[in-house]
Length: 168
Image 1: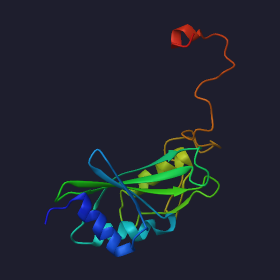
Image 2 (image 1 turned 90 degrees about the vertical axis):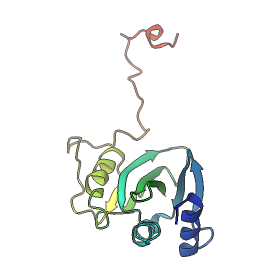
Image 3 (image 1 turned 180 degrees about the vertical axis):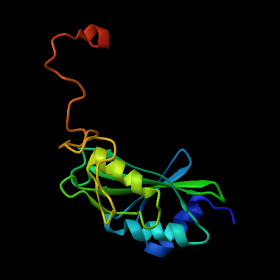
Image 4 (image 1 turned 120 degrees about the horizontal axis):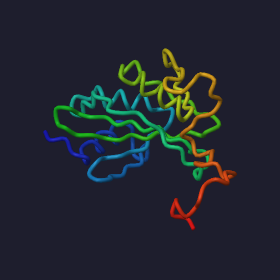
């Protein structure tokens, strides 16, 4: 059986019910949003279901969107079925005040460093992670540099010429 976006969507809907996911398709890749507290159940199903077999975790990253109250942080999982060469994207949203998501390190060992990097840059707390600490930034850092809470450049500098930056 050929694995298609429709068949993946049907399997997920049959397992978890109508309205559980929000599905979309961008550039041929199936993307879906799952509830925050169900991320491990969905990942485990995608891994264990023989017709799906998404057993390769390509990437975990995060996105900060301050314009979405209560859903400011999105944790994005990219999974790959190597036999069928099919990829899917799963998104989990969380509030920036309580950025807790269950760790996927027991299912995918490669999640270890990816989750540490996501914590380091966005502050997502992966509950149950065996060693959740900064991996690229210094331990003394008291902020998360890829959140959109800080201006990209110092507005108080007087030595820059806006003409040189296309603003003038």
